Amino acid sequence: MRTLFSTTALTALCLMGTPALADITPEEAWEAYRGQMAQMGMEPTAEVTREGDTLVVRNMVYGLEMDLGETSVTTTTTAPEIRFQEQNGGTVAVRFVEPLNSISVTPVGPGFDGAAETDMIETRSTMTIDGITMVSGTPESLMFTLENNAVTSKSEAVVIDDMVIQPGLSVAMIGIGGTYTIVEGEDGLSSEMDLNANTLTYDFDPMDTETGDKVEMGFAANDMKMTGSFTLPEGENVDFMQTLLGDSSMDVTIEMAGSTYSMAIVSETPGGGMTIDATTGSTTLDMTLNDGAVGYDSKAADLNVIAAGAQIPGGQANVSLQQYNAALLFPLAASEEMQPFELRLGLEGLVLPEIAWMIADPTGQLPHDPASLRIALDGTLENGIDLFDVAALTAMEESGAKMPFKVETLNIPEIFLDLAGATIRGEGAGHFLDQEPAVPGGLPPFAGKLSLNMVGVTDLITKLSSAGIMPPEQAMSAQMMLGLFARPGETAGELVSEIEMTEDGQIIANGQPLPF
Image 1 (tube, rainbow, N blue to C red):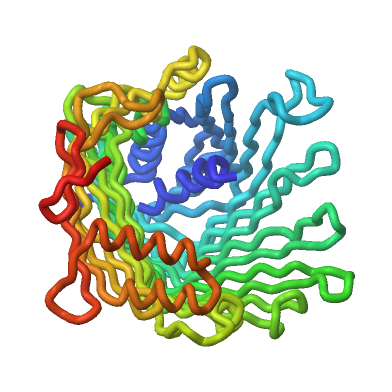
Image 2 (spheres, helix red, strand yellow):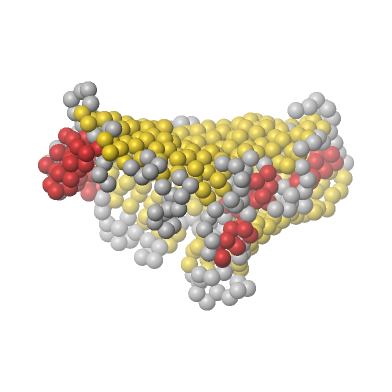
């Protein structure tokens, strides 16, 4: 489904987009667009005629094949009619007269009973592009301007042996405006975008479950804004994945004022239904792609999830989160040099429903304050394979070879946990030794330091034991381990721990070697 929507969306994006104050003809606009499609590995064919002040492109067909190793996904898209009309001031108005139609074909392969090797999965969709896109500039430097446009897409469900393996999906982006540029240079195509949309919605067709229930899902976001840039290398690139993930670059930011998500299980069985409704406040997603390394950084504020149903104690449970953050940086391209990686996760102000506290802490021993968690990791690693090279990955899997990853350094810039009245803060750094793992298939020996500051942990263990959450023998073991690895700090209830793992295999806690 993602492949199908992405490929059909390319047509919309390529014509929604690029700055110059020169005249451009309909023929030049069409040829520039056709060349851009070819550069992305799609060579469109069409019937082109001139009708007065308009260049009419009929039955434009282009294809895209994605190699997935033992199988592949082939998508063919047809645009029945596109009109490029001359405008005053040397600009061109582009309009899609009819919806685009796409067919994505994937071999069934193993996993489906009774399926033959020649059986195929076909996913069909239509995309409607409403509104006019104004094209200005020159063939080498195009600007596309939109105002109150709309794009809607409908994918049909995929059913095999009376089982829905991919539900139908409707996507709509309404109120699209802004500009998108495409500039052709010596090194390829470069683009900058500044687009906005009033709403974005995803609605899945209802799905039947094995128990006879129906599942309904939907998503909506409002006041979207997308800014950023990307580049494509020069030349007609046949390998789509190599071009997209290995040779291109991207720096895009997507912002939303708020979003809603809903899922409903509709059941005729008494007490069998359930609803889950989630909302978020402002959300930001930063995506980067540079030198074969992919980056992702998302932030969302004011998350609220409500689950309701007869099987939930009290009929309803509410979970809220003041702020959520997740980030990842990982090298997809192979390199003989060490490359950086990064991982971050943050949960701020997590409020659990009272029913959860009633189950976990029936005697009320623990504070029910909002909880927070932050953890950050970074370091360097050596990647010996292009993770977008499907053929190489398939060959490696067939040969039984291990993934050629080698982590060199690992840093922990931050550990933070605030839960039930206890707080833990920490940081650390270290490196892996160039030695064989102690356990076959495990990580090599590690040398480094970890610093921890803990407040209220001893009291928390005592309360967990008193509440019956932690058995007394486990609580005693935990207290003994704290006494072994930590020492009292400067304030009441504070513990400090400095742990070092040396290259000769020793573990030193607060300056004292441990006897193991």
